[in-house]
Length: 445
Ligand SMILES: O=C(O)Cc1cc(O)ccc1O
Ligand SMILES: [Fe+2]
Image (cartoon, rainbow, N blue to C red; front, side, top):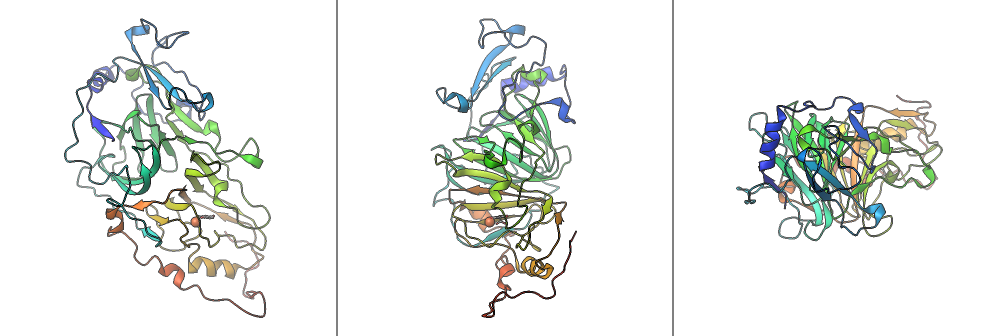
């Protein structure tokens, strides 16, 4: 249902642009407002916000008031989201929508047998090269890898990736299907939203709420990244439970644009995030990855995520007599992984920045043979070990993803992925624990 349109409003914006008070994209955190889920007020011109009511007969500066609802009107107060925008013209001032011709070839918002397939096989993709010649913008460069459910039934998710090289000149996307969580892996994104401007670099993430129009410029040209989309719910910060009031992603590290001259004056909840305080084991055993949840989109079942966004950032590994990499496992949730930079602790080879993997519901996976052997060789007395220069992430869902045919048939599918485990040898011994006598005694860095 996502549609592109050139609106009369966009033209009005183009005219106003010459007079814009804030023409550039923010380069500094202080140029934003901060706080996840906060209520913000921001004015592109002093006094642009009406006082004491939302919808006065005459708004300051002759602006139009317009509400964007992020939840049903009657949603409970603590879940209720809405934004009031005060605009030069209301967003309704555009010509009728027309089907996009040709339709986007690889964007899916409803997954069923006719367009996608489930497989228990472990899947891995190499990074797609970015074509420097054929002009492709962010929207045209999107392609769905997998997903589940339906945007029409307001339940489900989609995982897309993009490769692009051109800015979205003179056009904006309104994604009516769901929230986007964008993870650039290569190239900065300059985002112009109805609430203001954002600069998002690899290592940062961007949340674009359902229905806000936005346009993406690519100042670095060649760009690649990942996008998760959730239907019928919004991303929120996870509860911290026994961690306490602080830790993981802090609300203050989510930055929201200030109102931008052309847009009038109401910030919504477009957010970027770039800091994270990891918590983890300090004595024994490997923690479940939920300890690294940055954002979650809840399902109706308590504790069961429609989509969790989890990161694997640089950190110390300190556990005693513990197998420190991820354990071998089969998960009733499904796991899609990507890599922004560096290597991933469970895969010595083959999982590359810009690549991806999918381990569906109950599909076995875990460290590759090389990682396992190297871990055993370090021995049980390995000292504190710092994982550096890496940023992997996982989307984890309670729904079973269906994979799109172009992803299954992609020339960048790593058909030898399974080989990374085939070499795992039996260490079985009736004598008891098979201790490796060559074990290194001390720390690694
Ligand atoms: O499969 C993976 O690599 C992701 C993952 C990481 C981890 O530390 C524990 C469980 C898990 O699924
Ligand atoms: Fe896993």
